[in-house]
Image 1 (cartoon, rainbow, N blue to C red):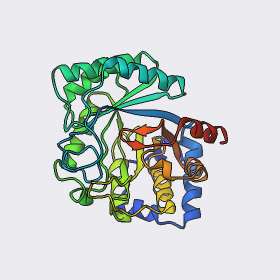
Image 2: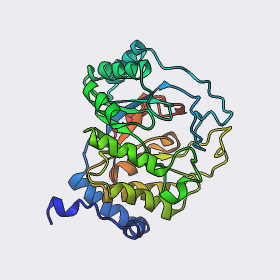
Image 3: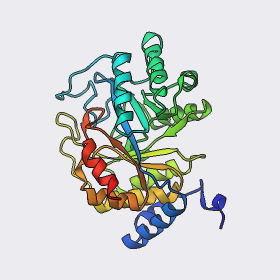
Image 4: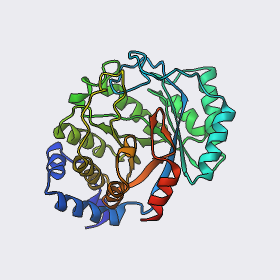
Length: 312
């Protein structure tokens, strides 16, 4: 069977659900085979910097940056371009090849703040790293301007299945998110899109998320898989942790249904042991966020990651 036959965009939710629920060793063996053939063998190291923090009007129930909840987070205005430039060069020196910038906006603003972000993108591009942004909902003309400035990819996560989405977020719809992803494609920007595990979703919901992503044509170039980090003050502060085998099943299934995508271990990675992360790499993960913070949540420090990657 040739490559074009193996990479599918017509997965059904039942197929994805059945894959995810295979005998674990059978699932992992199948994922390893796909990963060996299609998955990039290097582990891409990415840094995520919050360039505008907090006071977000969205009501995402997991997020410390929402203005709807009382958390310990202090809002911060848009960062100075020179500080972003400095952080980017530091990330490059530490081995990162992709630099992501996040701003807690409902949608990308127009005017001086957007111009400042364009300048940030230009400066990060000069380092030679890939440039990614996650700035909320976006219009095609804004994404075209970002691409012209040097943007590689735009991140806009679907978070969960369509059915479960309204229990997590009510301030924007699933279709709002899909419109932004479609605009990114039209603008010629790569798509980075994934979800979060641990928000009270079922396995059917997880299959729904992966089906939504795997039926996109082309598939998202990058698929971040996050473990919920419960934040005190948010409605999900008491959420139960996800068993590792369920997380591993999601990573493996993502690799099978999206053979060439970068599957990225994202938030919550600090809760996994090095051995567990290496298991994820063996069945499909080939990208991680590095550095001490992911926007506002804790992450693994550089030295531990270097030692782990060296041991592979």
